[in-house]
Amino acid sequence: MKRNLFLVLIVFTLIIAGTYLVGMMLPVAHQAASRITLSQPRDTVWAVVRNLGNHDRWWPDVAAMEQLEGEGERWVQIDDGGGRMPLRVMVDIPPTQFITEILDAGLPFGGTWTYDVVPAGDGTTVVTVTEEGYIYQPFFRVASVVIGHHRTMDRFLVALGEVFGEDVTPVHLY
Image (cartoon, rainbow, N blue to C red; front, top):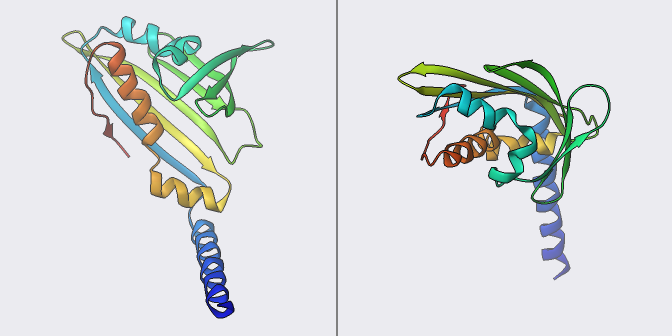
């Protein structure tokens, strides 16, 4: 009995150590982008995408958005599990692009999201979300490879399509 428990403990330790070592070999920085096309005019899409205060009304991953006081446009995005992620709008070029940045250096990740909203002709609009991210902890790097860097962007874009009654499938650019 003690021998089996000892073997289980050794295997568990090797798995944890192996996962950590793999995470150490993965790069801290990554870039990923996803794109959809909507059968809506750019200004209509821009109004929905750019209104950060309403993201919690249509994006299921977000339970609430709280705007912060002070200099610049800053928000706290609260996920459906209660996690809080402070953001600031770094760049705002209506109606084509804005960039948000994660402000909390204490999180295990950080980076920016660039939202590009571009007319594509015939009344359609292409929406591209580009993530330039950083994952500081090795275990989270391994998890990000398993889950994929596009997952959250894709969920955002699919939910955006649903706002307009459109069934979309995000295309991964890189």
